[in-house]
Amino acid sequence: MLSYFTQTLAATTFELGPQRTPGWMMFLIIVMVVVLPFIIGPFIAKAFKAKEYSNRISTILLSLFLAITPFAYQVFKGNVEQSAYNAKLHEANTKNEAYKITDEGVEKIEEAMPNVTVQR
Image (cartoon, rainbow, N blue to C red; front, side, top):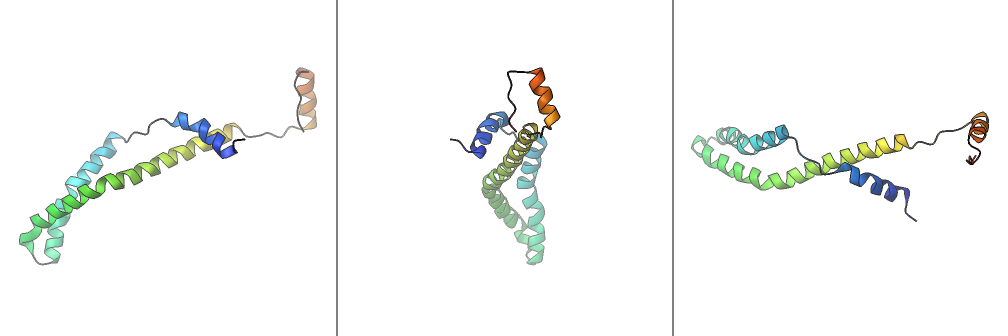
């Protein structure tokens, strides 16, 4: 028998679909990876009092940012997918809440639909 979690996972997985990163987020990531090293590089060179090495430091930072980007993106994407899954799970749970029925409600249901049995 499947557990409640497994049933919920099976019911909501197909509804999520592929998560896509918005265009503005991709643009922001590209700007951060390509432009930010050339902004930070001169400040690091100035801190080390070696202004002539600012382009070299910026290039090294660019290569580091390019190397880290796929891993950082996967972590970010995983967080986005997890939050989307949690939202869908919460939505499914709120739709399927069990409502308490009073004795009067049970009598009305049994009168209206004689074929239906209500468990108490």
